[in-house]
Structure formats: structure tokens, C-alpha cells
Length: 466
Ligand code: HEM
Image 1 (tube, protein in one colour):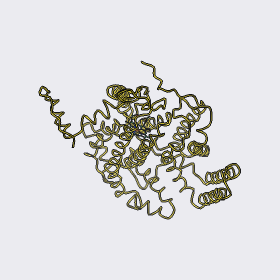
Image 2: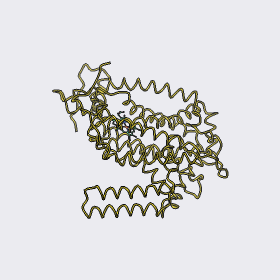
Image 3: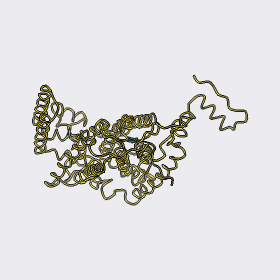
Image 4: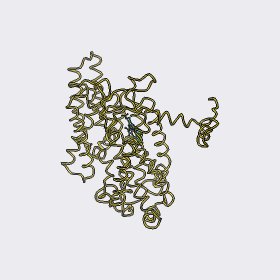
């Protein structure tokens, strides 16, 4: 146990209280470690505000969620009407509900930008692999949270969206139908499904999410933040052991983040007050119709933040599986002809390729669609080991790497757009090319990320006073 400290005799009541607390709980120590004496690189830019914004959105979602639960009824006969009751009769209920529904989309916008920053500056690389891995787990939880939450208003889209997605699990070989039954708790999406989704949405996932966010920040503060130059500021310290290019998080970055927060809140309020449905993208029009198990809507599409992955699912047709088989065959031939394998290695490549191709053809394309959709998220966990670039930040990579990143973003957005559209032959072809590009970007990264002429990385971070 740490030694008990005494407050000076002339201390104010506040100082005495703080000493009393510090003797029992490391408040000042925590404040210093994570705020007042947490040295963050002095060259943070606009991209560095999204972590704090994600924290704010998380708080908005939890607080508004608590108030929604006070009036919402997780019962298939009452759910839709209870949401209407919140909108019409509960004082300020409309505000709470619109903040929560807009918050869901805002969460994904902020988190996508936050992840993209990581990609730009190589923030996932040593020693921040765990920061990234916790982040990817957060992203998975966020997707689960949004999916479970979407069933709760019990509108047509809630109902049929859940029906489509849960049915996908039935495509898993051998255990699929039982798995789908386990998730639904019934043979169709029903009151039992609503109850379990409610339970996951309000308690199970938020608990895991909160734990992961804490782990994410503890891991980050253990190793320290990266920065737009991708230089480790801890490598150069002053006589007191403070990084030469570091500045205390508080007040420098609290001010920076408060500024970003005020801009964010203006945009957020504009949507909440003037366009809460956001043209049907944040709240889909079909969801203003109560769920009807006997009437399938003509066009079922998930909410915008899921659509890139939904496109990849739809792109995985029999034709696409055949293309994958050909690609595997080509890769194996290339590896055998050009790779420096011995006879055993070559045999292993051939056997591996045959097994992979055999498996691809053995199961239904629908199942592989599910694998592709899940794999698109899972592959991100491996990014720290896929990127072999000589430098972390995009600033010092060959210029053409920027175009690859640009193309990646474009492909992701096109996939997102196509996922909202009804299926069409052209859309399908474009999604297939997009899906191949998406996976190629990651799987071929160990090769392409090393190519090209890298620029010299400066010793110290670049910073222009402003
Ligand atoms: C609820 C969601 C999340 C919250 C609240 C959150 C919070 C934060 C905060 C406060 C920071 C420090 C400030 C900053 O660098 O922006 C941070 C850094 C970071 N986050 Fe997240 N994060 C979330 C999701 C994610 C996701 C989904 C990923 C990636 C898959 C991720 C990857 C990272 C990385 C790599 C850093 C270090 C960046 C650097 O030092 O350059 N985070 N996060």
C-alpha cells in the first residue's frame, strides 16, 4: 500500500478532499498518466479528432439508449407502437429517438474515418498491433450492436433485414440450420427473436464494447500515439524523460478535441433537427410500416454502413466461385514456377491449391458469400502483419501507394452504393471486381507494400507552428 500523504495545513477544502481521495484511489495519478502528463506528438492533425469523437458518440448512444428503454416495449405486439408512442407522446421522446438513430450512423462515419487514419499513417504497426486489434474487435461489436438494434422498432425493414441475415447462417455447412434456429429462437423471426436481440443490444454487446474501448485506450497509452509522420516520439527524450516532440494531452489536445466536438455537434444537430431520416439512409422509409411476416418488401437493403459488405455477399455467385478457383490455380502455378520452394514445398502448394479449389466447389456459393462478407472484416485484424512497407506513414511512401489507397476508398464507396441498389447484372459485375480488389488490396499487401521508392523519413516530426 502506498504511504498516506497529509495535505498541507493551509490547503483549501478542495485540496484536502483530493488528498483524501488520492490516499484511497489513484485519481491524480490517473489524471497525470492519461491527461496532464500523457505526451502526445505535437504534429497531430485533423485526422486525430475521431477517436475522441467516437467516445462522445458512444456516450450519446448509451445515454439516449437508457432513456429509450424506459418507454420501449420488447414485445412483437407492442414494439412498433411503443416507438410511435416515444415519438408522439413522451416529452422530448422524438429528440431522444432521433439522437439515437442519427448517433448510429454518426458512429459509423466517425469510426470509418478513424480507421482510415490508422491506414494512412500505419498506426497499426509495431508497437500498436494490439491497439488495432482491439479496434477491429470494437468494429465487429459495433456491427453486431447496430444489427441487433435495428430489429427493435419492429418495422418492415427491421423484420425482413433480420430474416435475410439470420437465414444466411443457415448456409453454413452441417450446422447451419441449427445455428439459424439458435439465433432466432424460432423457425421464423418472431417475438422470441425480438427478446433476445433486445437483450444483446441493451446489455451484452454494450458491456463488451465498453470493455474493449477501455482496453483500446489503455493499450494506446502504454505505447503512446503514432502521428502523421509515423515517427516514434519516444526515441528522442529530454533530460526529464519527456519526448522532445510531445506535448501534454491536456490542455493542448483537449482544446483541439473540444473544437472538433463543437463542429461535430453542429452537423449532428442539423441532421437530428432538419433531416433525421437523411433521405431514407439513416432511417429507411419501409421501416415506418409495422413488420408484416406475410408481406415481403420488394427491395430489402441493409442500412448504408453495412452495404459494402452486403455487396460482397451478393457478388459471391457461382461465377465468382469459378473465378476464385482459376485465381487459386494461377497463383499455385506461379508459386511453383517462380517461388524458391524445394520439391516438398511445391507439393505442398499443389496439394493446398487442390484442397482450396475442392472446398470452394464442394459448398454452395451462398455459404462462400457469408465467408467473404465475414472475411472482409476479419482480414483487417491481420493488417499489422500484411503491411511490409519500409515506413509507416503514407507521407514517406512511394506516390503510387496513395493512388492505391485512393482506389481502395473509391471501391469501398462504390460497393456501398451498389449494396443499396436493387440487384442488376452490371451492378453484380462491378461488385465482383470491387470484391476482388478489396481482398487483393489486403492479401497482396505483403508484396506491393514493399515496392517502389520510399522517401527519407526525418529524424523529428514535421511541425509548422500555427
Ligand atoms: C467505439 C469506437 C472507438 C473508440 C471510442 C476509439 C477511441 C480511440 C481514441 C480516443 C484514440 C486516441 C485518439 C486518436 O488517436 O484519435 C484512439 C486511437 C486509435 N484507434 Fe480507436 N477507437 C474506436 C474504434 C477503433 C477502431 C474500429 C479501430 C480500428 C480498427 C481503431 C484503431 C485505433 C488506432 C490504430 C489508434 C492509434 C492511432 C494513432 O496513434 O495514430 N479504433 N482510438
